[in-house]
Length: 112
Image: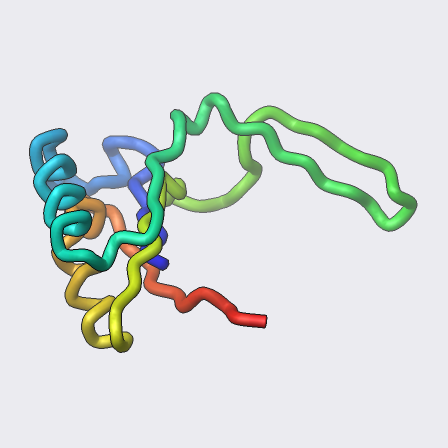
């Protein structure tokens, strides 16, 4: 899975050039045409997020947005089917989300 993290603010991009909409369209097309695409979605704006926590007593707390001391926000993901980590890292490096202060975290899907 490629987890795509974007800078939380433009200031967090540290002046680096961010990917254009066209860059994303081209990458998405390449992933799909390569035959490795399993699933993927872009997430709605962070302002639409709601966080749920359940305390030890079972009490539910609901808050607007995530509560994190981070400069990155999960913006979306791709699930790809590739033979090994090296190939996944190559695809992650090609992802527009890896530029402009963003990052792509590569994690295998756990099989139970």
